[in-house]
Image (cartoon, rainbow over all chains, first blue to last red; front, side, top):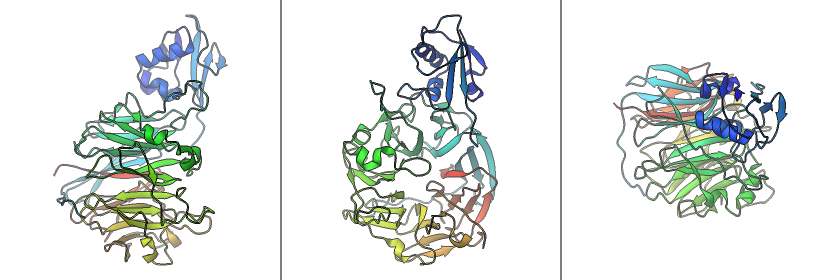
Length: 85
Length: 385
């Protein structure tokens, strides 16, 4: 399925939209990390929580846990706040 | 007490400058009088510490994060031309119930192991935890003897009693005679010692003031800003503390406040302390204003480095070339360093983006970079002659 990547993570994917697979969001993030090593830890901490300023949407609805089910037609968007200075 | 001698180095020096917005490199000529600026690397990333592996002279480790992404540790084996991300960075073990597990906010301190352990590195993080790598910084494991110590929460106030940038484990010092003998500094928490490679720990703070603590002589809870062990005299420890400059000669466990010998109008508050590579009695500090609400700037707006050459019994001001007034500089604990030349080069970076250098042990200062971002750290990478 298609996954939108925010600009701070383009150093990993080199593209704003990439393909990844998984029956759950957790599996999809693991697949992303296989394809782009290191990208998951920048978004998800070692306890499995989405980092505070990261946002993940499935079909434009925000999710807060990683066990959300996914199907091949789903669209996953990863966004990141750009607040700060 | 002295274990050996260390020959003086010569030739060009590379300064590794970690800033709030990336990594910069400053390269000198052989005389250390002309400098050129390279970079930035990782523009926009917080670069807390960049360190050359002195054992191979070519591997750099860099501790970074961005404002919102998780931390990342990068390695370069070609002095910064290319970087590879550590495949398993410092991280706490996952707690199975998913509740209450600790999370590494950032890696703050990087410390290479001894020459006899060529692939070993240690790192200190915020919250204050200790990690170890045995493969030159590619994968990291928790030092559970510290991170899971029964008193970890007590000694660190659960990692919450932090500096403005977060509670820190810093100043990892390894006894050059014994890789099992470690000292660490916690801000706040104090100095701690292990003699078994990190399996067990004890506080080492007697004699140090903690004037923010109502307990008269607490066992822990102090605020060491920077702790240094001299490689030639590893029984001597120096400490720039929140409450002054201290020196300790083991086996004593009582620190002596040698900062009492600083001029009263300057005081002995600061962040960094740096030691002469061949003279254990010589140290440099950069005093800051620790009065009132703690401006943390050069006292009276007149920056100066102070040096002692007699183990802290007396201190001399070294400010030639530095601004004479209205210079409100702050130098953080990792932002001062020395090289191994003769005479020794002394360097510091400021939170206002300047890097200052002296190629004569502080006798004369030159600004070698300005308009950089807020400087977190300055380290020397000694290049081949």
